[in-house]
Image 1 (tube, rainbow, N blue to C red):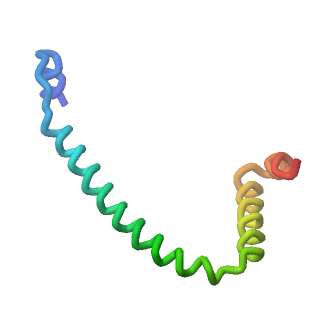
Image 2: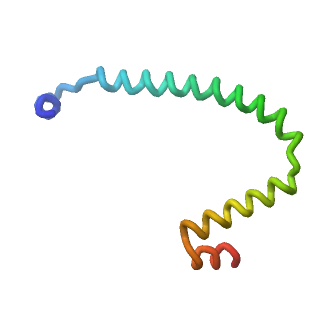
Image 3: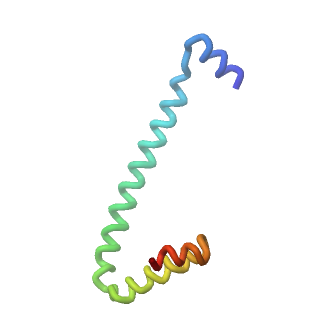
Length: 81
């Protein structure tokens, strides 16, 4: 840490760390794009088989339960108003 402070005080910057972060971001972004495209293809086939009424009820129940757990009765009152 002291070495980094001395470099910054003398106007020198260690660009190697920035390059590593940029490379990590690019690699993880590329992996995420491939994963999302594959998951989207599978999901698009499955979504046609879902009963929307049941899905909507499940989402409403999930949100209500999460509000009760995280916010308590006051949160539920706000949700219902």
